[in-house]
Length: 345
Image 1 (cartoon, helix red, strand yellow):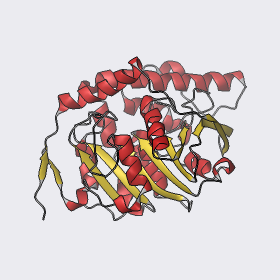
Image 2 (cartoon, one colour):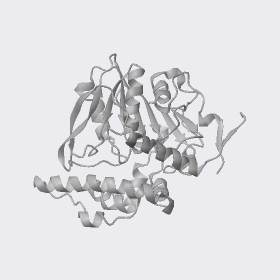
Image 3 (cartoon, one colour):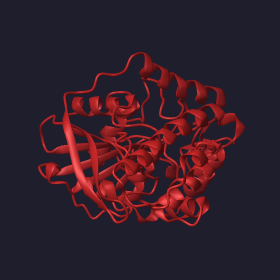
Image 4 (spheres, helix red, strand yellow):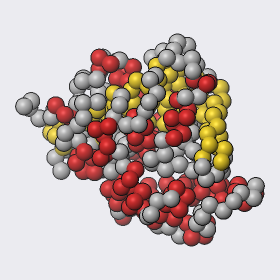
């Protein structure tokens, strides 16, 4: 066995890098590459036709990076824009996709296991000119990407990367609902509540049939993510309760079904996706999965000089894109199954 490089979780540093990334984008938002609107229609059996939107940047060539945002983000989130910028520098086109409802259209909202939309987008005629497709997802968007990679029949989908993504939805919900996470919880529940309110308003305005959505006044009283999901995702998508949703949709137990090369980038000090919730699924990683463990950083916030050990420009986005687009990097530095790293709990 190789000697172990011990990574010590640093909770305060994790909060620092998480907040630093968020504040940086609030103060000085990155400038996205030139793009055009993207739209694709999908059919949902309960609500009918829905529009998925985003921004498509054509950098030339036949390679495309699809970027998925996190739980309360959108295609305009700073980390998503930085991924598109890194893709352009690497010579890839990019699609910054809004997950269902993230564009505040009020048509519907998404959940952590809703992969039908991504499959529909990958099959879109608008993207038919691309011969190779790679998906990069952040946080909950990364969970969607990994889950889609266990199902994909799209031959052009070559690789998937997930940054700071949960594998155990129940475990992450419990961590998110701890008192120490109240600041994150308050902001994210407010954002999710606004999206939900827009869905209710739109359905009322167009006279759409009742699909059993919980009244807004009840949803607004939710004080935990588990309670919020139980009042929104559960009735909308037909789960028995929040635990049924988490259990049936978590990607951790089905990682052995991955059909394409996949990368999971883990922050040892991530305050929202604690490493302890990931480790049960990473003791023995499937052959299609590589896991890069970073000692410095927070939740989707990392130092500018972050490297995964690849011969590519520094920065978590540039490094992840280098891994995605080069099959030779599949077993590079930072793979947990080689036991190079150990997290001291």
